[in-house]
Structures are given as structure tokens and as C-alpha cells.
Amino acid sequence: MQEKILILDFGSQYTQLIGRRVRELNVYCEIHPFNHFPKIDDTVKGVILSGSPFSVRDAQGPRIDLSEIKGSIPLLGVCYGAQYMAHFFGGEVALSNSREYGRANLNYVDTNNELFHDISTGTQVWMSHGDTINRIPSNYTVIASTNDVEYAAYKIENEKTYAIQFHPEVYHTTEGSKLLFNFVVSICGCAQSWTPASFIETTVYNLKETLGNDKVVLGLSGGVDSTVAAVLLNSAIGKNLTCIFVDNGLLRKDEFANVLDQYKGMGLNVIGADAKAKFWNDLKGVTDPETKRKIIGRDFIEVFDEEAHKIQDVKWLAQGTIYPDVIESVSVNGPSATIKSHHNVGGLPEKMKLKVVEPLKSLFKDEVRRVGRELGINSKLLGRHPFPGPGLGIRILSDITPEKVRILQEADAIFINALHEWGLYDSVWQAGVMLLPVQSVGVMGDERTYENVVALRAVASTDGMTADWVHLPYDFLAKVSNDIINKVRGINRVVYDISSKPPATIEWE
Image (cartoon, rainbow, N blue to C red; front, side):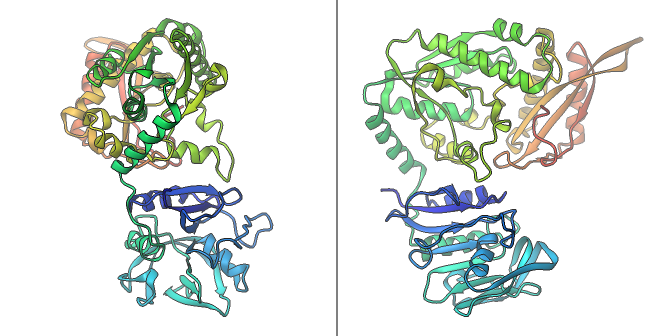
């Protein structure tokens, strides 16, 4: 059985980051809500308690039964987790005189403690809490402090239980990865054997065992997740896999033909379904973003269902679900139905009466790419930017018409091609163009124009949860703006979106 670290989530915005850092150590981990986690067995090598937006002093704050964990297996409390084990086991947590937030430095480090092995005194850490530990129980020992926070870290005597009031998972904590290594590898004894190659071997074997000779359908999008899922399934069941790629009329310029062409040499059985007219007709006159999403999702289901019924004896639906989707759906804060409404395959299993197989559901996005490289998938395909499920439907900020789709496709193609030509594409996590519901006055030649405005959007991110706008060169932006205005009939003004997430989202709708 696969050894693992359990991360118990109290609702922190950083919980996924803890998981990513542990995975970077080639150690498998799972994130579960604090109130719903699996039985502790021999496969669980250690447990990490996350931070939380709550205070341990709040009556409605999260409460957890640690009786099967604390003192039995290695345990690391982070922020809320640290304060929880101090507050409820004989110590005292109180409101801090000033919010302990941002960079700090450890002025005391017990380098003899295994958690802080090879971590330097003075190292920078990141704090983020309004409470602080005023007193620890008598059997707790301080192992790190800052000028303002005496109990920055502690250990419980005669237990492999540790706690820290800072966040090792964020990059502002300069030796955070080293601390997590000390816990996960040195203290928990994890073997660091969870690699892309081992994942492929295990997954293909399990798929063969689960699916046998059954037939499977998969909705391809041309993106990284569905492609890697398809290749994994193809390795396991070959001809019993049929992939369906739906043209919803909201794809990028020439994407339908290009994606089908890309898959030709990959040995995949792919069916292309041209459904542009259906989508455009059903979206006619609709401006509300959520309604557009629902129509796009519904139509996708109908088209996919129709194509799938042409295949005899299908028993399984494969989906490219990845781990952040799974985490969100079982989050301590509950499902985020609105946020996830753009996942255009939602509802398919119920309608089609098929069993679901999700070969990537344990992977983060960057891990999917690493698995794809191990599978030998073309690097250009693996390096593609994420593209939203509703496609250009949520980048047209008004009703959708074929003419608006044409305008946006042309502008978007100029922007994306320019990023490639200038060598900027790989330094951007996601980019696209938004067609705004605004017309502006312009002058072209001797004529006054009253035409559309588009906004360019380019962000840097690791997983889409947060994102910063990219400082693209001014001469690049000037060239793109000039090309769009000169070459795309119907546009006379280009603007650049310089908002970050949060507070803005990556997409505009």
C-alpha cells in the first residue's frame, strides 16, 4: 500500500500549498477535512494540522479528536494546529496585542531538535495569525522563537508531536521546504518514492484491474488534464477507450481542427463533434454569466451524450478531474457550486448512467504535467495555458453571436501567437482576450469609428488559486495593440488588465 502523509484541513487558504510542498518531496499526501478523515492505519506515516481563519477561542471554531493520532504517530501543527494543541491541552492562547502577520526572523532555533535540523538562526518565516500562544503546558518545550513570538515552535516531550506558529509552505519562509523535509522524511520516515514513473505504473495497473475489458468514453478538451488522462487510459485499455471532442463554437481560432490533428499521432481513438450551431442558437440573447455557463454545460452534456450513445456497450465515463477539484468538493467549507459551475462535464454521470473513472484525481496541475512528460506527450501540448470550460463564452461580456466570437478569436490569436513569437508564452500561466460590452470612439484614416474594446489579460500563477498580472514589455503590448486594431475589423481600442487575484478573478465572468 502507498505510504502517505495526512493533512487535516481547518479551512486555511494555505492548506493546498502544504500538500504541494509535501508532494515536491516525492511523498504522497492527502488533504481531508478535519471532521472527516480516513482511519489511521499503517499507511499513514504522519499527520499535519493546517491553519484556519478561526480562532481556537471561538465557540464555533473547529474541534478535532486527536486521541488516535497525538502520541501515536508523528504530528505537526501549523498555526491554528499549533494553537489548538496548546490551548486544549493545558496552555493558553489569547488575542495578540498586534496582529502577527508577515515576515519575521527566528532569533532562537534549537538546532538539536530534529524538526529544525540544519535550519539557521535568523532564518525568515511568515506569520499569519491574530491570536498568539501566551503559555504552553509543562511538558511542552520551546524549540524556536522570534523577537515578538516566544512560542514560535514547540515540541511535546516523549512524543513525536511538533508545532509551529508560522507557515513553512509559503515561499516567504525561506527554509520552509527544509523544515517539511525534516518532518516528512526524517521524523515520519517517508521513502520519497512517489514519482511520476511510480504513479504511472500504479495507475495503469489499477485501471486494468478496475476496467477489465469494459468500454470507456472520455470528453477531450485539448487541454493538459484530459490529454494525460486519455494517454493513461489508452495505456491501460487501448481500443476500448473512445475520446469525444466537442466544438461548442467557443473555442480559440482553428482549435477544433488543430486539436484533432494533434491527437492523430498519439494512437488515440478520437471522435470530433461539430456543435457550433446548437450552442450559438441556445445562447442567443443571453447575457447573465451564470446562465451562459449553465446553457454551455447543458448543451455539452446533450451533445456528448448523443455521441456516446453511438458507441455500443459503454460502461464508464472518464474525467480529467484533478486534486484541487476534489479538495474543493469536500472542503471543510463545503462545496463551491458557483465557483465550479464552469466545469462543463458536471452532471454527465447521472444522466448517462455510467460509472466514473478519474485517473488524475490525486494529482495537482504541475504533477499532471510531470506525468505527461514521463508519458512522452508533446511538450507544446503539455505547456498549453489553462482554458476555461465555457471557453470564449465567458470572455464575451455580453450576449454571444457568431460575429462576436469571430472578433474575439481573431484578437486572441494575435495575442497568443505574439506571446509565442516573443518568447513570453512559457513565462505566463494563463493569457487571453476579453471582449467588453463597450464601444468607444476612434479615428481610422479620415473616418470616425465607434467600435469594440478588448482587454488583454496575462497572469502568473502556480495553480490558479492566486495570480499576479504579468509585467509584459511595453513594446510588446504596443505591437499587439497595433496588430489587433489594424487586423481585426470591429475593434478600435485595446486595454491591459493589471489586476491581481484576489481581488479580481483571472476570467472576467
